[in-house]
Image (cartoon, rainbow, N blue to C red):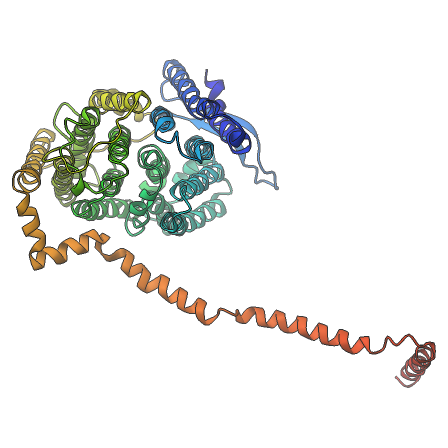
Length: 622
């Protein structure tokens, strides 16, 4: 079955092409069949490939499939080829499985949109690009998928382009992520010039042989790759694009946050873990970036009133946990949390979409309330997803993955008690903003009447993802063992005064404290929350966190406005004046030469005679 690996990418890609070319001429039923079934077939093939991979000896093997040579210039001959190992297999399983349920949900959610076929063309291309990124056996093909998801995010965030705000959000996402992409491209150039190949496995092998631990080139290459990962995964300081990306349709948000785009950075760092192991300073930077991001995003999530923006900041924070795990050397824990996060974050976004549609496009959590009985399926889906996000002990998948990261932050070889404390504060913040959201949306008096309820195509994905958000933690041990075929096991440095059980107990207390504070301020005594914001200090802090800690203002002041000022000064383009001058000189020369075209033969004969005399004079006297 592993010979079918290429079909996992080819089927969504072919469907995207067909929908882009013929979609406007097809009925919505045909568009749905193409758009949804292509991802479903890809998911089935992925499962068959996974079964074959797991059963095939020897243990720890990898499978490479070369389709054709892409470029052939001297010794530079990158392939269109796919590389399957434990890491890429887990990633594509999650992408195709979660992606299928999101596509099925979209069939109902987007049914009456005029851009229905265009939406599925973009979504299928999004999945195909992500799969290309995950399966690429060389960095050039990986970069093609990398830019593909960037393009699709732009197209989908600005899907409703008639609203200028949506176009602005799409451009913001595209430009900000280009900053990270530039850093990554420089990293690829550095690696190629150092080792003469783009094959990922060859690169990692040669790097471990030729670069010493802590060498300048290893640190530079790792930091440049980290720059790309920071942009795609919306980590500090390039996190500003993701909250505004909520302008796109809700299924798009679910796909970006759960299965594509923002997890690409996590994958690249994990895939090049050998390089980061050679650059301890860069690996420590990964942990530091993740730690800072999870705290800042968690605080911002506490202040948002748009239900999707709360979830967006939640994603930024949870990706921060994954970066923290990668930075301390808990590689498998990061991928495990990627898997559980895909389940519960897709569930939360799809649940939010059902709520928004039921309330006639209402987004503010302060104009919701009392929906527990009005939308029971959305309530239970949201409650399960929220509990998994907050890490409710023993019965949710998020508990097992996030607590494993927090424990690794202390006990891993690169771990430190400071990282553990950050993880615990993050757990407290996560519990607080999650249950704030749940209490505001589903409890208290009904404020906005329900005008529509989700049908089967939206309900079934919610149920399936809710089940995964509960039982996903059961695969912890076999998954971690399986991932060690591709990733190094976490090396424990000796956690003095702390055990994993004690860490889990503290995390549980953090969850309960956050739950109680959210209950007190956002259900029992909501006046307390209003009083806290009305306080001068509270008002300033609330505004600061609400504005993403002032990052948008900073970038606008330091980068955007100076650029616009320079553009206004140079609106007539000084460089163009030089070329315009050449054009004007040429035109003037033409006007002068035009005077010689009189049509009188005697003037032409005289001109020839004078020219001949001058030529002969030059020849004789030179």
